[in-house]
Image 1 (tube, rainbow, N blue to C red):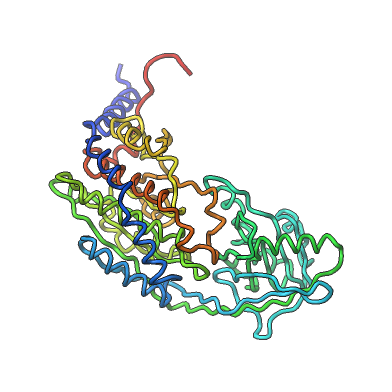
Image 2: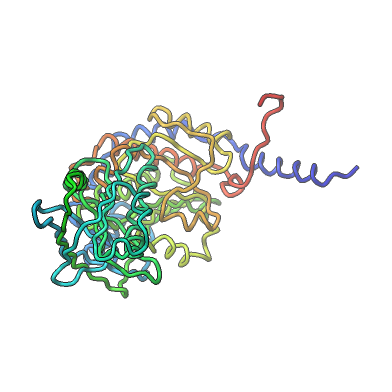
Length: 475
């Protein structure tokens, strides 16, 4: 009897097998490349250059224009081809001045940083009583109009985690806090910085305003001053704050993504592996771990793969340094501009979570169990990296638009245990970069990208294929 379902399963299995069961990659060459990468200092030098010669570089700002010019020069000097900038519109927010001080019985200055996109206070500032909330749920429980004329402050700390999930959970305070405070009648909003250290260096980051809600001034309070406020609030006396924020916003700015390529060879040269990082950085520090190290790592990795003796990449390597990750539109701008050629991109990933080390690798689809995945696992394991069976998802903010359009991704997970000690703060400077950790990152990227660029794997087919489990009755 004809069984369409059984036939469909058989066809699916055949497609999966053909996509995954390719010839074993050149592990010997990959291991040699890994060892060369561990001894290469290109990424450390590039990080030093970008943070020293350019410094802060919000997308669309004069600092970013210097960064883009630097990137074009460095990619060209390192042997990349087709180096160019791709322009897109971006709103440009400029911080201006930011001050906060308690007035009255407990008069003292507090360290604050305006949130990216924040509205300004009146020129003379705002002075109002504080409404202090120890937790985000406690703040949300405040009734409508209950904060009329007051400045809302939320003091819930961010949990330190390896994968950044603590920051992800706490981010709602920064993104939605100003609008939630405005709905309750507040005239301004502060939250404890989304940092995991105790410091007087506040952490910035973008906020957003809900439609139809007042755009009130908003700032992050240093973790040390948040703890101070909590102690003062426990004394039971009213607290008054004077706040001055003077940011400006130009809705008609322009930024660019910087692109450079290492051409492939032979019949696979038309296929592209895209390596991403973001070139822009917030203005408080010099953007060392966020994301100069990512820029440097993917650039150095592509160059090392190109220099592999006798075994350069068969697929083209394309480095894209995105020009407004912190303020939003760079990833979508790239995907939209290149919509007609996205089918050529067979694999993509982004480095944007500090200087390392990497602890986990995830591959498209079921590739971890295929010869390609086994070679990756074997080559990366001496770097203390586990290749896990779950498919890669969420490979980076800037490549998310590519992933949503069907581009396969891989993910190399960086250890973020101390990333949010520095992230978006004045402490994000070159002296914090660990050269040994950064070398491990470059080695991992170089090794995996080499194996992908020289293999026969059909990454697009492998992403949608699934291999049936082996026979047997085990659970």
